[in-house]
Amino acid sequence: MEDLSENAKLKYLLLANFLVLTCCIFNGSDELRETFELVPYPNDEFKMTVIKMLILDIVFCYTVEKSCKYFYLKTFQKND
Image 1 (cartoon, rainbow, N blue to C red):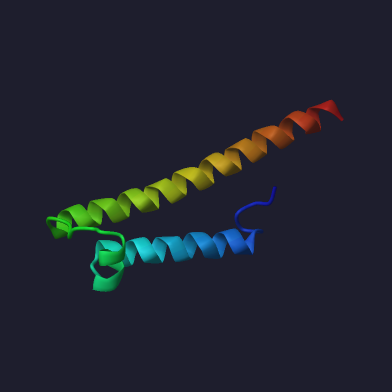
Image 2: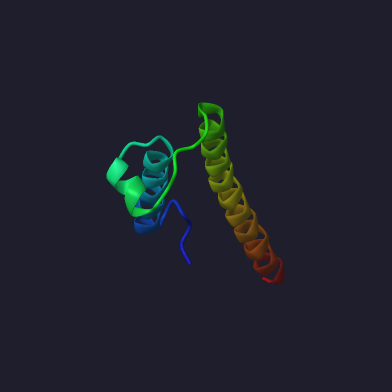
C-alpha cells in the first residue's frame, strides 16, 4: 500500500478520470457524450454543483486515507 502522493500511476489515473468527467459535464466533446449516452445538464449551477461534489469526494477520500494510516501506524508504535 502506497500513499496517493507516492503512487504516481494512481495519481495520474485519478487526474485523467477527473478530466474526462469534467469534459463530459461541460460538453467538451459531443463524441464522448454520445459514446456514454449522456444528456446535457440542465443548467450551469448544476454543473458546478457536480464539480464541487467531485472535488469534495477527492478531499474526503484523501483525508480518510491519511487518518487511517496515521491511526494504523500509531497502534504499532505504542507496542514497541
